[in-house]
Image (cartoon, rainbow, N blue to C red; front, side, top):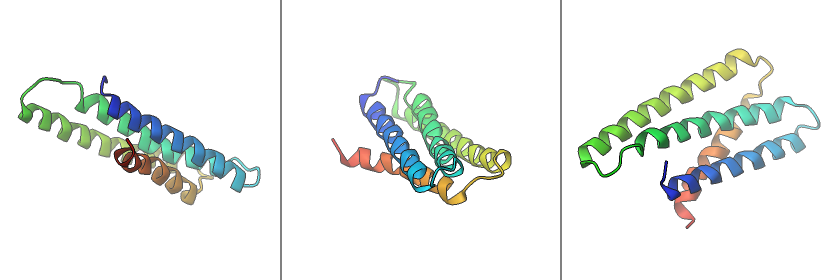
Length: 119
């Protein structure tokens, strides 16, 4: 992935995830359930976004139809991976904080929108 804009957005998402995990750790009062939940939620957004970028931007200097097909494929993989990661989080971590999971996810996803606004 050579696109600097994509790298910048993914780095911003990772930074927001770290901030969210630290905030979750402070607000949880010393328990590990909330920070782990926030981390899992954030990773459920960050990893599929990185996979999307890897698939969508693998081909360069090709016709527009090929680029669109790559983006559609990347979006499908991203959606399926996100659902699988949420499902795995809910199945394998019984003491999960659903609020923390969703907070981590939305904090990380907001990095995408902020990355488009910030130059």
